[in-house]
Amino acid sequence: MGVIKGVLKEELENSERMKKSYERELANLPKGSLVKKQRRGRFYFYLILREKGKVKSIYKGKVSTEALDKYNQAKAYRAKYRKLLSQVKKQIRFLRSTLRGKESV
Image (cartoon, rainbow, N blue to C red; front, top):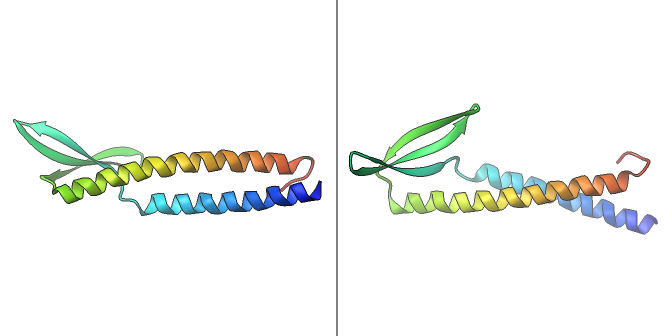
């Protein structure tokens, strides 16, 4: 039984390292997302983000295609890392409850 417990502890450590890595990657991504809005027949971009629990819109005007690509790519990465983070958190909960048994981890 000791071998299995050792493997589970090692997997728990790996999962916690992965969690920290995903959180670090999410923190490095630019905040918010660009939204295209039409005003009086013209298109303008706004940066939508959450600040202190409130949604905030910041006018960006006309945006270069490079900046637009950057925010679209960040949006895709953010979705990817959030999904991975959710999965690894579930795995950590499972491993902790499995390891705990009658003793604390």
